[in-house]
Image (cartoon, rainbow, N blue to C red):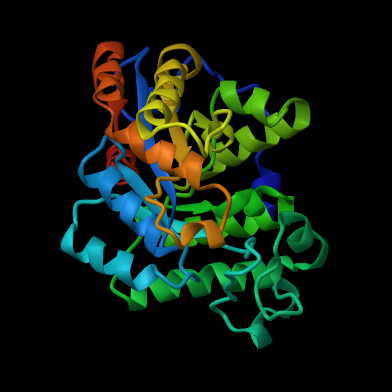
Length: 328
């Protein structure tokens, strides 16, 4: 049904002089930002870092990997902190070698999404090669159902490792569920200044993503103007040997520069991974330094000051959905 809906919307030259932020009622020319943490529930360490960044730092939104082992702990935290903006980090891959998870729909229901170990495929490429769009939708709905069973109603949905953006068929199922369930989905459908560079998005692909943005907007859901998704690659040289203070300065400087020089007016989601690594995390992933750096940056008073000086407006998925309900 969604495919027909999407195809029926003509590819058009969108008037980008009016950002989605302005359509939602934010002031013209302002940078409106969601400081968003991915991977909550993935590990105990992920939960520790995420909770600190949300409670003590400037991060203001998060999404949860529902198939992972530490989800109950994070959902209990959300129940104690009901004001936190929390969504689903829809998960179709299980990328680590020694710590893995399977589909919530169960292997018999989504066989094309499962590898020989009984876990989700380890890479996006594997999911694209083997996975069916029908099974992708089944697993999306299973992850949403698990959240609701636990008493967790998500404010939005996004995609772990970008898997749901890997094929048009996956993307259509993602949008279809969002529209039917009236849950905002992460999709940059506006000027896409950063995405055009980072993802080399141009021509028909750029037209299509904007077309899908218009589809979401017309269905009553908010749409991003842009997406900042490069912080995972911000890893200083000799990251395992520098001090915490040096790591914090390195990462905070990167975020400050992004806010001042890279992010453009409009509604932008900035993705990060805030982790407080214990001795266990190195057995899961070698990404501890960049993830801890994100946490330290969110706690850095200089970043908070830069947000104020730049006049950046921080918002959440909950707020923009409320705003969307008030505009035609």
